[in-house]
Image (cartoon, helix red, strand yellow):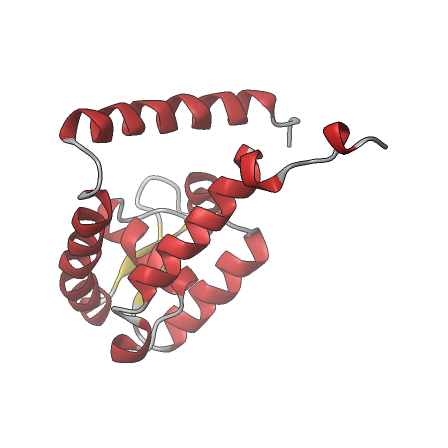
Length: 152
């Protein structure tokens, strides 16, 4: 294989996005892992349920693109720590939904400003118009990635 055919990771978008995602997640996690005893996955679930209460674990998986087993384990830990409550859906009694407990809401309220502050400091290197354009480009890439994904 010629060098020109080798995968150049420094220019390969999926690799760059993965590294950036991990770097940003660790940066935000520095604000809550030790202080609040949450993992990155647990915070993501709390953040999603803080924004969209009453989702099922399967809906969290779909919304976040997180691994099903990882979500299940994190939900079990959060429920065991009293940070989430599981109940039956009002619309469909066969369906289990998750909501933040009082402690979970308190965590969400405490960590959200820290996460927003990190985001502001991260984006500070980009002018406002570039921030808007980046958001638009990320939306487009997400739609395209979903379109290219094989059916479940």
